[in-house]
Image (cartoon, rainbow, N blue to C red; front, side, top):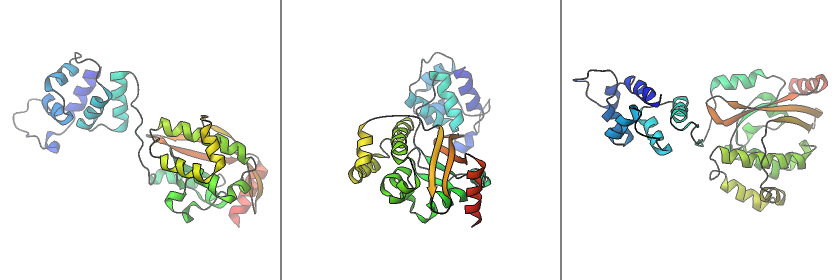
Length: 266
């Protein structure tokens, strides 16, 4: 199956796009030796791989083959599953923006604060309800739009979260698990060091080494105008971007929803 997949992907590539001559070609796509050249592997070994005789390629070789064949993220994952019966290790990527389609999904949630965050818990997108109830992320510098930074350094965070200690414990545990899963451990080292110095509460929670999934649950929050509101929150993976999470906070009761509507109306 791996060999068939490699041959199929190879046959659908345009040699001219990679600077290879189009003369004297009997079949469409790249030749085996051209794929091997792009992947920096032996042409003989690559031929064996297509014939089912090359053994199990390493993750490094599979990544080079994915590059050589210009595979998409989904195609690359499929390559790993065929070759190693497991998906590739997640490679953390910095995310600065989301697609317009996903932003429209956020904006369609009129009375439900919603945001998109990275595996490093940086908020990169939000809707009007989130900005109104949870804080205006747009007024902050991009490096300040981090949920942990706000939770442990913003005095208003404890005012908004009635169960701050519980929320802080769960957030740090989920943050630790997600950054490792997404390969972002090195990316957050500076943030962890900074918060460990500036917040004794964070330092103690980080030393506990607890891990948990964020998943879903409830939050009781206070707003200076809307008052107390109970939210049911759920976290969803963004298709094609496992390092991003869409988090939606849904008012738990009709009264909670009405408080949000009244706040937005003002």
